[in-house]
Figure (tube, helix red, strand yellow):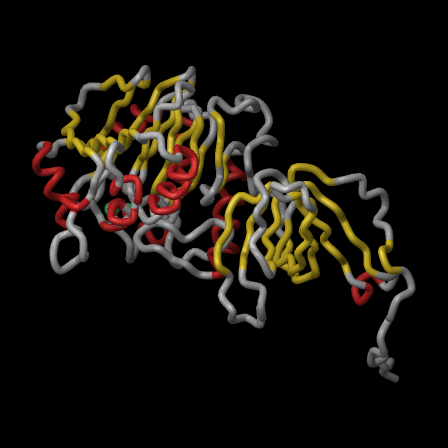
Length: 414
Ligand SMILES: [Zn+2]
Ligand SMILES: [Zn+2]
């Protein structure tokens, strides 16, 4: 079973530079079974890039998918009008929700596209769509057993558990601890999950005070559930719109200090379940316990295009950690495979000429970088996972002795 996060943000999309690493799209998770059955959990704005990716993958072949909605708040349905595969004849989608008659589910989904909210109504979509009300008993879709459990959220919400291919995946988002019935139900559905994706929008202080009753949770409760229920890995999810990357790093660090197999859900992140390292060390989990260094230094990106030609573009690395790097470049990096990155520490820092550190990295997410912040023509932001460091030896100067330009000398105080 393969999981891909297309949207991880709660409440509202936040397309902002400060959120670039974790991502600003609202909830949407793709689950692909080993037999290639497509399941989609929630239809937030992350559903739009998912649709484009499916069109690229399937080409002219028909797409069929099984969509599961946790509930109907905007952030969980707003991607539907922008999900291009819905407009294409020959595609088939089966929408599921819990405790809502099929016709009621259809009306709820179509309601957001009626006049005057959207210029095209759902009738204009060429695909075939079915709407199903799930009872509380489990269903079987091409070998996957899927069940739901009620969560504590205004107007209701459900968690989903998918058991397939020898793994268990659980999504429990939009839920607030403190209701005995729901606290039990979330624990029951999370039992022995290989991966629990859990609502971690708030801090315990917020939950005690101004956000009480808003229907969300915190990582501390996620860790309690994970420990009590034998969960193997925990992904913090439904990130607060006000939580920038640095703040989310701190939440993830906190969670990892108490549960080593915890990480932050990140747009573009893909995982195979069961994870190879489960039960052992957390080192294969895309974790963020490592320190992330915020800096701005030159970077060169090299890759080979489809015609076999080597392309190089330049830009700036914005921050770096052991496993990842975020950088902005002049042009899109159109590589199907990994790319080589030279992160250059300039002479101004090394006093030994420019030094390049070379890595093999896999771009996992791209976004348009705003032209503000002095970015100039650096228009494309890319988050990449570092696959390995090339033989960097002790860093070799690439331009020994060049410059140093005239710099004001420090004057020693007397
Ligand atoms: Zn939500
Ligand atoms: Zn909600």
